[in-house]
Structures are given as C-alpha cells and as structure tokens.
Image (tube, rainbow, N blue to C red; front, side, top):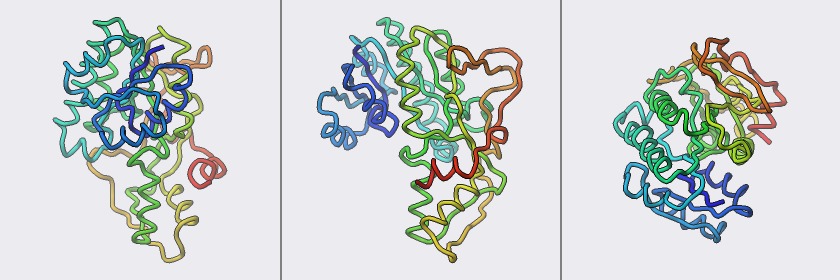
Length: 288
C-alpha cells in the first residue's frame, strides 16, 4: 500500500513509520527539512516531500497516487495556539480541509489524528481539532488520543530538562489530571487502523490511563532531582482546564470488535478523574 503521512517527521510520525515501513511504500510530508534529513538516515527507503498542509496545491500534488493518508500535521501546543489563534486555524482547520479535499478527489482513504481536548473544547487548540474532526466525519477514521509520552515538546522531556538545568519544576494546579498514552501504544493503534478500513468515525485508544500532574512531577523529581528541587505553583494558564474528557455531553463511548468508538448520542462523560492509574502504572510510563 502507498501511504503518505502528513507531519510524518514528528515523533508520532517516526514511530508510525517504524511500524509500517517494512510492508508499505511510505512518503513523509512535512515542513521540517532538518527532521527529514535526519529521518533519511534511519528510513532510507521512504520518500520525502517538503510541504505545508496550508498549501492546497502542494497537498493535492503530494497525495495523488497514494492509497492512504495519515493526517498527523498539527499545531498542538495549547499556549501557542492561544497566543496565535489564526495560525492554529490555518493549520488545524484549513490544513485538514486541504488534505480531506485531496483525498476525496483522488479517492484516497484517510486516517486523522485528533486529541482529547476536542471533546470539551475550551481553548483554541481543542476547538480547531474538534472542527477538524467534524470536517472529516463520515469520510475518515479519527483517533482522539490523550497526551503522548515522549513526543516532541511534551511534558516529560521539558520537566526533566527543567530539573537538570534549574533544579525546579512548574506545577499549574495540584488537582490537574491528564490522559496519557505511550508513543509505542499510539503508533500501534494507528498502524492497526489499516485493518479496519474503510470504517469511519471517531475512536479513542483502549485502556488509556490518566494521572495527577503533581504525581508525575514528584516521580520525576525523585529520579532526576533532589531534596532541594523547587516546585513552583504557577496557576492554570490561558486555555487550560483542571481535567480532560474523552467524550462530549452529546457523545457516548461504545466498545465493539476491540475498538472504542465515540458515537453521536447522549452518554456518560468520561473524564481524566475517572481513569487514574496506579503508582506502578506511573513509574512504568514516566520513570523507567
């Protein structure tokens, strides 16, 4: 199968390529030249295209001739999207629309990457990703995932760097909880989606776990810091909320055939306060 991955030079894209490259013909589409140059050394059999999903003509030309597109390209940092909302709209909404239109025109199947912040969108990032979900609904298969541990710019690498550089960490709120999934697990789910195509709809990874942010910081301080490590309580930043949800008030979570699907019907909302992992889960995911 000929597969194109938008944003394919990012952390999730590279983990996905590692799972697919031996059986499929892979094209990486991204705007990060240096990342693509580095990827060529690890995945020399892949094809590489420098481009931006904001450019509809480039997107259309890149997708032509492929069987499947994984759409991973996104602006994903809440604070960045809050400060520059139009940039988030251009990439997350218009970029998704360009990919969708090209896939429809050339009859290419599409798998879309979303976020749990789209379920109860109170910030620009969540709203743009929810609109992107709605755009592709009925045509694409969407994965609504939690925070991916180890992805570029994510919480864990930043906390470890802060401890090593300044012997301090920042905590926004002691009661804040978040869903997490490993890079290995999210790439596995995305790769396995190939086997259920042409199914469409919004899905969440099975058995996704949540944790208190303070517990993650304490575990990382125990491993990388010392008794003098400072914990600065900064307060919630613009666009943040105490807990995340997997589904909206008008959505239900349905398990079938090993997949967890989000359906447009009233159901019980699942929050990150409901799925808290154990201390062993936390150590396994963040410390080992």
